[in-house]
Image 1 (cartoon, helix red, strand yellow):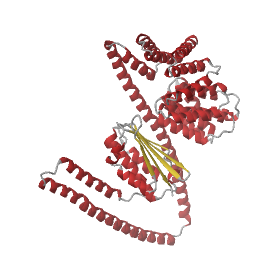
Image 2 (cartoon, helix red, strand yellow):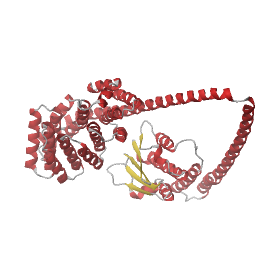
Image 3 (cartoon, helix red, strand yellow):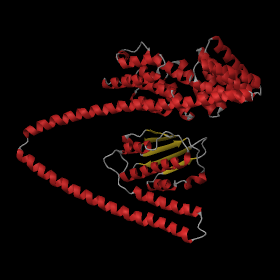
Image 4 (cartoon, one colour):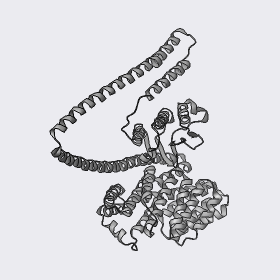
Length: 551
């Protein structure tokens, strides 16, 4: 239901007849028209592919409105399929190219902000969601759209536990002339009222919203009302009525083919039903939950693959053009070069190549000798010392041995960090490869904002430290967190770079932070005059915020 409103808004924009050449130009794109057909048929995987193709076609024509419309539709589909980080990244890409200059671009910006808000809300980033909704309100010229955003802001405040503020926004939203939006705001107001212990007012609002939705045959709305009424009666210790509405929600969510709502209804039935029935609902819940997770993982990989293939084809075409240009130049050059100049050039090139090769070999040998010596001094001697203690000291226990070996392990890692990296590879690409190297069947890794321009003014020494810090966080995650989703977000603001790390693992307590291999991370941050904070009080997982100056 959350995504439906965003799709509806895009449909309204697409059908706007008041816009002139820009809209007509977009409609000539056969990929875009085909994508819209698939979207209307709810074949969203095919729609995504064609929107991506349409975006490339619009790029060739320098049609920014067409590009933005394609990206926004792609972002909506990704959000609806559960690829929330991908949706946010795609929406931000659309936002960068949109400029508020006419009614169409303004409406597109508002729609895009709505999608950003929905995905942020699903990720429980309610403060971000509120910010995006408020921006959409300032852009929207339609009063009913503005009032719908008020309702969504109220719902976000309700999730944050700020009930009084939420009620004020729901009351604003009730001014809408749209019956579906009115019933939605009324239902939300009822939920807020019974949280505030105003039982009489809460039930009246929930019941009135239900009657409106039943009269208008708003099945999505009825699904929401059944959920709210079930929660209300459970809150009032009326298990019989709560169970009745939970069953009604389960029936209509199956009719609507809404897996998320079915999951919610099944959770209620498992709690409310008698044990002999509760077991059967639990089996259905497990099967459906696994199916949803599999489907969303498949969709995420598919969306990423489509975009990767598109970028790869673009890069291949550019390389082919470059190769052809170089070939033409070489043919032209050969015709005007003299034999004498060519011979002199070849002789000079060979001598220079031999000299560079010799220097490279000497440097490599020197580095190998240095590393070999340190491995011998630190690792071999350290392990031998532990072996000697185990053999000769009767009171040398297992815990002491592990501590000693951990120290040798850390020293060996320090040696490996001294290896010089390639200077040819761009730093953002190195970061992407590093994060991606920890991705497997159990762990998904994501990066947001890892652009080349983010690292342009960062010195090589600082880049080296940042690389090791990110690797340290990933190693710690792999060893301790049990996470299956890991996100790095990079952001450059003026002379400051912020790095946000988040995973959905088991978390970590304050006193364990420096026991999980993170002391090196703190030390490295201090070396580049940066700051690091660990958010350990989150509901689940670990969040780490790092900031440092670029110069």
